[in-house]
Amino acid sequence: MKVLQVIDCAYRATLEEQDDTIIWITHAMKGAGAHLTVLLGGNATNYVIRGQDASGLSFGDWRQTEPPRIENDVAGLVEKGVKVYVLEEDLAERGLGNEPRIDGVALITRGGVPSLMDAHDQVWHW
Amino acid sequence: MADNKTLTFALMDAPYESARSTTAFRMMDIAARRGYDINVFAYEGAVCVPFSKQAPHPNAVHGREVEEENHPLPKDWVAALMREAEKNGGKLDWVNCGLCVDERGVAEAIEGVRRGTPGDLWQMAGDSDNTLVIGTR
Amino acid sequence: MAKYMLIESRDPFTSNEVAQNYALAAGLVGAGNEVTVFLVQNGVLPARAGTRADGLSALTTAGVTVLADSFSLRERAIAGDMLADGVSAAELDVVVDALADGAKTIWN
Image 1 (tube, rainbow over the protein chains, first blue to last red):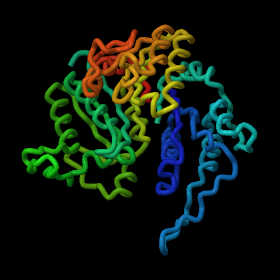
Image 2 (image 1 turned 90 degrees about the vertical axis):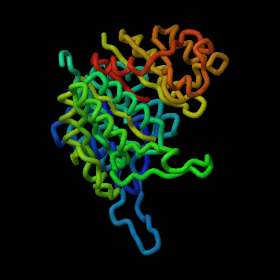
Image 3 (image 1 turned 90 degrees about the horizontal axis):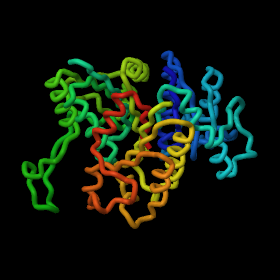
Image 4 (image 1 turned 120 degrees about the horizontal axis):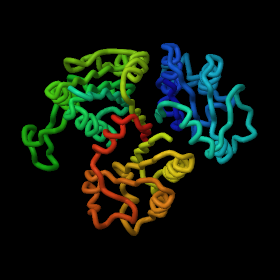
């Protein structure tokens, strides 16, 4: 079974969780043998942009020692062989079209999404 | 049961936060009445849904005491669906993501709920006729 | 050809992603699929005739079946005779039917 993971919600509880929890569960399921593709849309297109830095969170004498490193986590999926697509229009409307992004992600237009969905057995929109 | 189906639902919302929770339960209720086998992978806040320490409360704004208010407790919904599915020849297997349980301190779940991992979601999905993921916002 | 059931739980008045979801539904039909959009929760709000429901009408023109959850409609005082053209009230059972039949079912 091939599943398309659609992720468009971004930076939701990522500081508390130290991860984007959907990127994280994608890693975990991949490790369990899942056949997954990732489509990043909406604000989640920002996840492929280089230079994200969430370090330095502190409350009183509490310090976060392991901030989320989302661009590394997305790059990690690519390294594991997960195909990662990014919606081109959503990148552009956020002014990200020419920003440096991680290697190995593929751009896809909205017009290409039906075919991508057709190529998978199930589509899981998180 | 002839032509029995197995459906998997992945849920993320904590109780009392979103209409997504009640819609999910409405779908699972339909499936339970049909005697389907139902798998639930509860992720993040959804692991609080079967938390056994949920307690009802009165409603002073409406002048109702505890009994009259009869405040919904989602843990009771889970138990009710377990009974309904079983009554009709199916079952409800509710799996709480273990790490999500730990960080929320909600290990005390109602009977029948078990602890699992993302591998369980993939396994359940593979063994099902279909899977519906209801993400949170 | 595949069957798709797109569950739309959000409304276009508060989420600009809804229009994109409607467009996806039309695109999937254009790609040769059978597509149903099932409106639920606040997703039924644009189903009231007289609202900014152009997106829904365009869906039906594109060949998408548009259904609205009866419970969500009643919850919002939208009676059956108040629905926009092309939208039909339906029970949530339709979604469970689609799931059971193996339709690609996507929650928005």
